[in-house]
Image (cartoon, rainbow, N blue to C red; front, side):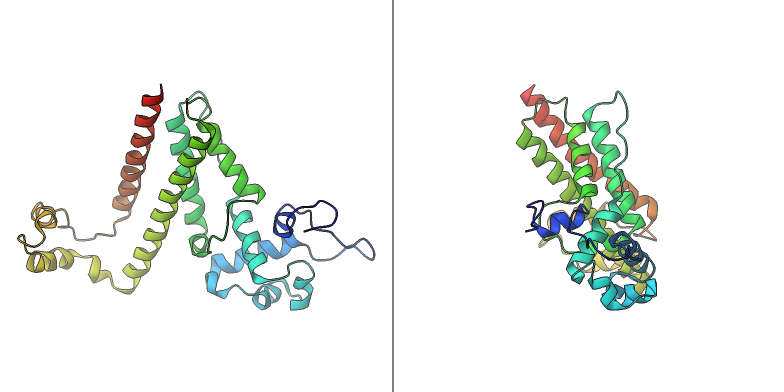
Length: 248
């Protein structure tokens, strides 16, 4: 805990409230400088490239200079995740909760596409940083006019975040697989399933295969991924709409 503001140390760090040195010259390096440099490394080279030494090199500083502001790599990752989220998009004026959550979800997706490494950072606790809490608040704002109880609103937002993050993670894994082996995403996949899927053992998958769902030259086409995200999002929001209708 910090002495002055009685906040958990990680929360104080994210909000810029950790005790700063009071004497001496103004530091030539700040926590924000370090965070921006680390995000730059992650964007250009991937999350695995991020280390205190690599970020120090990026800043042309000694590694010890960084430790005066950020005490560990875990702290650095927490700062990176919150800073990379930036500010959430404004909700469409005069629109209903569904339009608001749709805008919000696509905003989360856009951030992850801008910073693909985000989905690789382990989630170690609930959101506490200023940007992550701003996103949380904006999603709750979309639900403000519904009859949902406050805990139900939180449940909807957490469920939606689980869906979006899952889609982002899956898309990232598939993109990496596509880079390594594009043939696995070609029509060869459908041809293989037609040979190995026995309708007596896998009757329902067999119906999908027979319907030609996988008869595509490229299963990793960008427009298909976008359509899959939109379909899944609408299914989730349909469920929320049904619950809201029951309450109303």
